[in-house]
Image 1 (tube, helix red, strand yellow):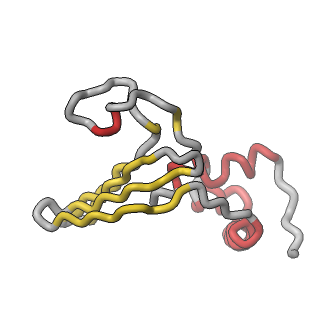
Image 2 (cartoon, one colour):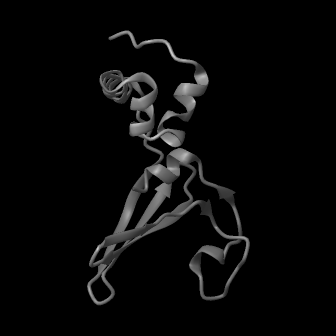
Length: 124
C-alpha cells in the first residue's frame, strides 16, 4: 500500500465535502491533489448501504424512479428527471417524513430517521 502524505484530520475530513478538487489543487498543488484523490479512492473502503429493488422509467414524464432498501430494511426513493439541459436528481435525505401529506408515500408511516451521508451519496 502506497504511503500518503500527512495531512491534518481537518484537511481530509473537509476534502470531498468541503473543498473542490480545484481548491485542493490550489492548496497542495495539482499533481499532489491528483495523486491524493487517486490513492484515497483506492484505499478507502466502500460500504454498500443500500440495494436497488425497483427501477421504473416513465417515458411520458421523462422520469426514472428508483426504490432502494437500506441495511435496516427501510425503503427510500430517488427520482431522476430528464431535461433538455441534462437533468435533476431528487435524493432522499430521510426515511419517512414528519409532515405527513396525504398524497405522499414517504409520510404515510411518519418520520423514522435521517439518512447517513453515505446513504445519500450512494443514491447517485
